[in-house]
Image 1 (cartoon, helix red, strand yellow):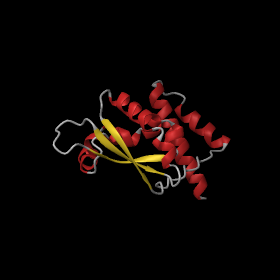
Image 2 (image 1 turned 90 degrees about the vertical axis):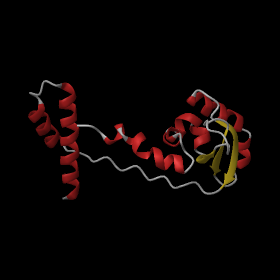
Image 3 (image 1 turned 30 degrees about the horizontal axis):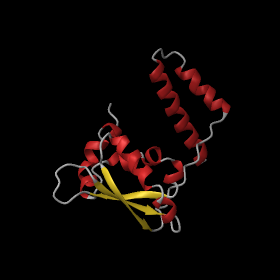
Image 4 (image 1 turned 135 degrees about the horizontal axis):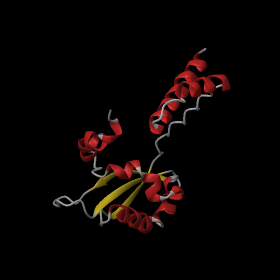
Length: 154
């Protein structure tokens, strides 16, 4: 069985290219690339590539900055461009343009379901004879998720 994540890049390539993000990793890895201090103040909106260039080099990154934070980010543009270019290994970003606008709301992380000790012990009893450790761990996660969500519905 294959996961969807394995095919994510190929499935979303056309959409990201059409909207200016030929590099989907920039969106997905923004916090790791920019650093938590910068990522909390802004988010990438799109990349505008030079009009007559066939290479994806020297683009303009448009950053959406939280209101009142554009000046703080303006001082960091060189560092942001260096971090992005080092992530890709070439000069993908030449300039950065900052636009002040509210950041998109991030969804709140879902609360993890709680499983009582008797149900956890029942799962362990069912899977203890399975020799394949990755399979046993996967079945443990599946059982915990199924039983915990069933307990929350009651």
